[in-house]
Amino acid sequence: MIRETWDELETGEKVGRMMFKSVRFADDQALFSQSARGLPALDDTLYKRCEENGMRIKDKKTKAMRFYKPSRASKLRLKSSATALRCVISFIVNSGDAASEKAGLGVLVSIERHSQSRPVGFRASVWQYLLHFNRPTLFEMDRKNRQQWIKDVLAKQIVDTYLPWKGSQIAGCDVEHIEGKKDNFASTTYAITIRLRKGEGGSEEYLSQSLFLKFIVDEQVVREALHSENQFHNEIMWYSKVVPRFDSLIKEAGIRDWNCDIFPKCFYAYYDVDDAVVALEDLRPKKFQLGDRYCLDVKHVEKALETIARSHALAYKWREVDGESFNEVAGSFKESTLNEQLDDTLKACNSRVMKALEKDPAYKDRLLKFQEITVNPYKLMRFFAKPKNNLATLCHGDFCRNNMLFSEGSENGNSTVDIKLIDFQTVRYASPAIDLSFFFFLSTTPEFRAKEFDRLFDLYHNTLLKTLKALSPKEKPEYIKNLENVFSLQAFKDDFAKHAVYGYFITAFFLPVMLVDDKTREEMSQLWEANDDRHVEMLANMGGENVTKQLVETLKEVLDRGYWPILENKV
Image 1: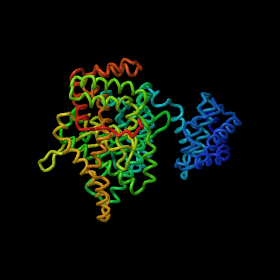
Image 2 (image 1 turned 90 degrees about the horizontal axis):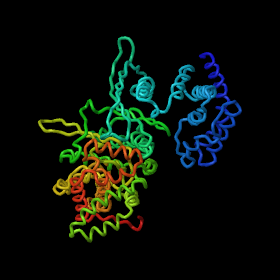
Image 3 (image 1 turned 180 degrees about the vertical axis):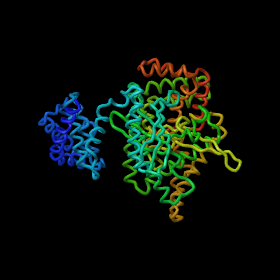
Image 4 (image 1 turned 120 degrees about the horizontal axis):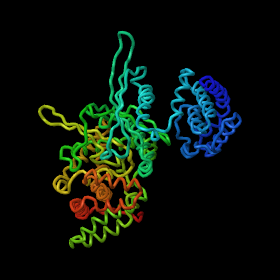
């Protein structure tokens, strides 16, 4: 059996050499030109070459057309045409016929050998691809097999690709599945501890690093409902494109007293149409944990606002110094939360609050106006989520207590709070009020906001302006004055007033889920996962009078403060 497998692989390598030469030109045309004709040409060429050499394919139209969109062809910064070809063949050789698949693996081996500047051993390459293509996708694996795959394959990939660990040997690896849906329902998560050995003989050094692994959630219905592929695309874009650019802006400005440690360190990220994994620093050993489930105290609110202000300011600076690259990245984030299926749910949640407030005659006229504005909540939310002016920035998109970790400490006898922002799966280019209204309404109480809102909004603005100035150390006074005019406190207040209803709707949807017991939350999740319409009615009544009262106070605040969106006939 081993001999037969090896013969098929060697035959495949010969086919691979021919294919590599035959399709290189078509490959280059497909991926590095503006022409929309390139991808069909590549598909046709690959199909003909495989057919000529007895490699069976299920469908002439390969998944290359799905994976490489013509409109994005010129934007793919692939290292070589061989890399692109390897990706495309990986889709078409999986025909279900063992001999054809093994021959296809040989094709990949050939490409690997011909495209790398540093030769890769033939047998090592063969078994690397056997491991990859003879496994199911990650979400199809059972837990035991996935944990073994993490140990045997993923740990090595992380070590090989993370530059500071290059050349290290894995001395040990432990994997733990992290249970629970209460605060982490959008991912399947594992903790992994990798023990590394560097050097040889008497100069050996040892290192142990704990990582937090995020995979696309296992349940298919949840994957589809949450648009999990889009969410992971966004998170990988954030860690691979945004954080490095933020870090370079901080270094270029010579800032020493803070850096990008407001985000977890990313060690590895992988994404394709079937699988995705992100490996982040495990913050639990550093005592980071979620804050109170509802109603953060003032010191945690202050820290959160200061941190998001820095993130927003860094995005403004990036847009100023390199608008082209900023716009390319900002335009690449995918919609992952707002879909038409939400419309009925948002209507039901809003109706719950409005019916309760109708009992107060003081709000009758304003409530009628609000009802008219919010008749199509889905379209309204999509309108809020679009950039409209120069205050638009890169928003976290899900900026609430669930997506920030805190660590308590002390310095000179005073208590301190450190923070990390996590879960960048719903990033969007939009008004900063998308983050601010979401955070204020969902993570603080109406009583807290009545006392602290204006001061805390000023804190956010002052931190943002201070950050922008720190990022511009060599600019002249005229520049700073213009900065203060463009990003004035009044401009942010006006912008918040136009978008705050976004945060109200999010709160009407999420607050009931946050304030009920685990059993009730699980029942609602089961109905939702089963696509049972009863989950809408259940959500609209969840939490009883206590939740309704808090949501009514939030809507009163919206109406009392005059948070009316200017729709400009676009909704």
